[in-house]
Image (cartoon, rainbow, N blue to C red):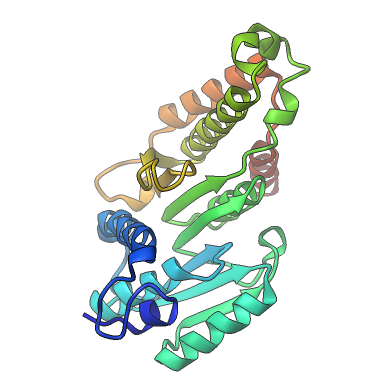
Length: 270
């Protein structure tokens, strides 16, 4: 079935066929919508929902979310796409206007400085580079977003902290080799991010976003706020255990991650 935004973004032909060279992108879109379908029971159908997409880029998935949730599923949603590239944002805005997507807007701006709303139901951040992911996650926690979907990218921060730590020295068989060091730092960073979300009251899963053959950046963090699930009461013990796990890991590696500092600021300001 022809889908206008997929045609304009070069994924689909006018007669509804998938462009061969964009098959990977089409699979990525469908895989992402599968993750969203899983969390639909957590979203309130009785009111307008606000979704923020940080680092939306060309907005393949932003348009897909709007089309799927509003056009196909009938949810009353408002989606805001945010990215630093003004020309890309301008183009996406024109496409949204062309399709009549009245509640899909695009803004140029930095994740860390965004203050355009005080309530968000779902935060999406895909391939926001390095600590930009951390700013997006902390914003989501600050808003008490019901759902967070994040595919991190380019996790450099911990990599630069490993050399001087006693824990790092004990990991020389891994850290002495650039490729292994990079992958180790990325995995530990994302593991800590998942634990930070758990310590903030979220049920968190670490999932494969897309097959490794398509991209090595294929880890997705999916977090659902515990008290947003009527079947689960808040579990303080789980949050406390996650905080203890973080403390031990960071102490061993002498790590000091941006997300930890940002969440600490949120707690202090409450």
